[in-house]
Length: 155
Image 1: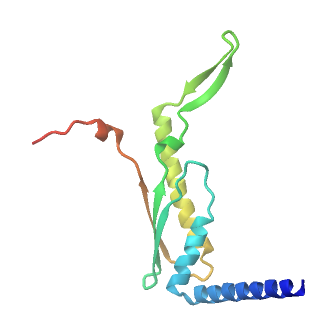
Image 2: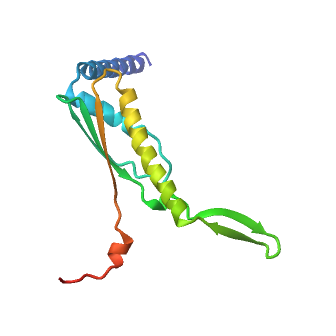
Image 3: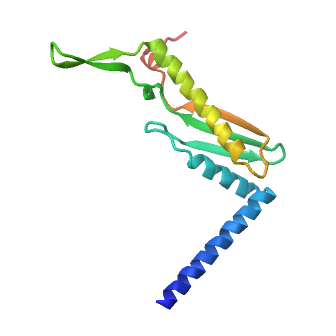
């Protein structure tokens, strides 16, 4: 039993040394450590189901600039149904459809909130002050249904 505790203690000490070394590298502005740290920050950010949470991250130490390319959810994350109500006469549930303008407005709000949240998380977690600027590029991995249904014209 004593051997097991000794091995666990050694693993624990090794892990603490690795964490301390990572922290020192981050505080000194080591490129790999800053990038790894920012990746951990963004990966720890919890989003609802349906949000892709895929991103690419780059850091330019000379300009103290972080660049994030973030995959945004499609408009499908906004429920098409606005409300449900029980209809006693027919003993059924009736749906109230959300207007397209409201769907578009809610989706635009979601995109803006993701951008602001991502920038906020990176800047507030940068306790060593390595980042002065965050560039956020959001993209949606989808096809335009109107473009997909449009016929091709030869000019």
